[in-house]
Image (cartoon, rainbow, N blue to C red; front, side, top):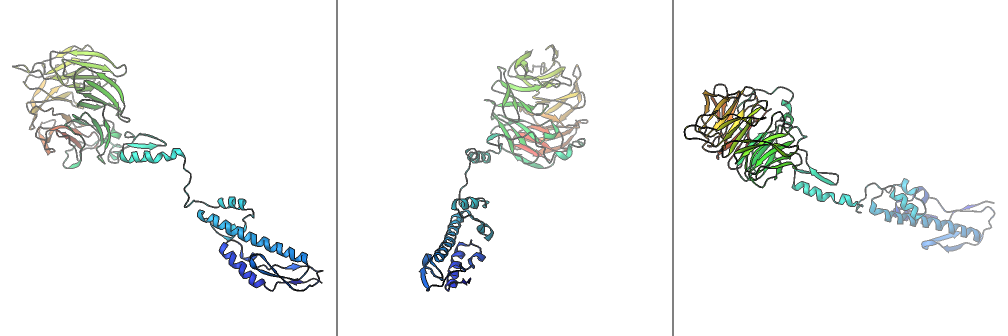
Length: 495
C-alpha cells in the first residue's frame, strides 16, 4: 500500500527555509513551499526516530534506512543551493546587479558559471573603477591645455590649431546673399580689443567676404594678431614671426596668408590658419611698407629705410627686381589698377618743392615714370587707391588728403582736398569704403574723420581715442562698421 507521509516538523522547517530565502532574495517562492516527502509504496512502518538534519533541523522519517538517506541527501542539496544563492548575492552586491526572481531562478548551480552569468546582467559598474586605456588617460592633460589656450582644440590624441578660416560669422552671413549696401557712418562703439603692448600701426579686415569678420592688426610690440571683430572680439591667433616691430601687414587676396614687414629687416608670409612661416626674406633694411602685386599675388614689394625698393617672388624666395631712387627711405607703396605701374612715397623734400616725394614706377622695366607728381613741401605717410575710379589719394603732413589721377602723368586735383584732421608727423593712414563714396582718415588728435569723396565735405567726426588714431579700416561687407587703432595699442570696432 502506498503512503505519502509528511514530516511533522515540516512547517517549522518551511519557516526556517523562508527566512533563509528572504535573506538571499533569490530562490523562487514556489520552491520554498514544497515539502520534502518520502514515497515508498512497499515500505514497512518502523518506530519513529528523530534524526538531526543539517543546520540543526530535526527531520522525522517513517520508513526504512534507504529512504531516510535519500531524504537527507535531497534536503542537503536544497540547503546547499540556498547557501550558494546567498553567496552569489553577496558577491554581486558591489556591481548593483538586479536581484529579480527570474534571474536568480535561472542561476546555474556551479558558482563560477553563476558569476559569469551574473556579469552578463550588469550594465554600468558602480564603486569599481573601470579599465582606462593609456591613450585615453592622456586626453585629460590635453583638455586641460585646451582650457588654458582657447586657440587650441583636441582632435583624437593630438592637438592642433583651431580652424579660424572655416567659420562664417552670424553677423556677416545675412549680408553675403545680396550686394553690399551703400556705406554708412558708424555712430556707436561696438567693442574694444585690448592686448597689444605697443602702438598698433594698422588694422585691416579680411578681403574674403565669408571670413570678413576677421581683423588683422600689426603692432610695434613685435606681434601681429587676428581677431574676431564682428561678434566675440576674441583674439583668435597671435603671430610671433618677427624679432622687431611689425610696421606693415596685409591679407593676401585668398585670405589664407598674411604678408608682414618688420624692423628686423625681414618680410614674412605666414599661414593664417597654422601660424607657420611659409616665406621669409631678408631685405637688409628696416621694412616700412609691403604691397602685393594685384594680378600676381606671388610677387610683392618691400620698401623702408633704404634708397631702393625690392620685388620678391614668394615661389622661388628670390629677389626679382630692384627699383633705385635718390631717397633715404620709402614710406608707402601703392600699386595702381592692373599692376603695370606703382607709386612710392618717400621722405625726400627739397627746399622749394617736394621733388621725389611721390614717384611713379614702371613695374616691368623698373624705370621711373615721373618724380614730379606732388609739388608741395610735405611728406606723404600713406597712400590709398579708389576702388572704382581712376584716382588715388595721398595723406600729407600738411593736415589734408590730396587726390591724384591714377593715369599718367598723375596730375593732382587742386580743387579738391580733404581737410579737418591733424597728422603732425604720425603715420596716419586713410582708406576708402568698398563703394568708394566715403574716405576715412585717422588723426593725431585721436579722432576718426569721414569725408564725402565727391565733394570733400566732412560727414562725421568720431571721437575714438585719447591717443593718436593711426588707422581707420572700413568693413567690406557690413555697411556701417569700422575698426580704429591708436598709438597706445588699443583697437576699437564701431557700428
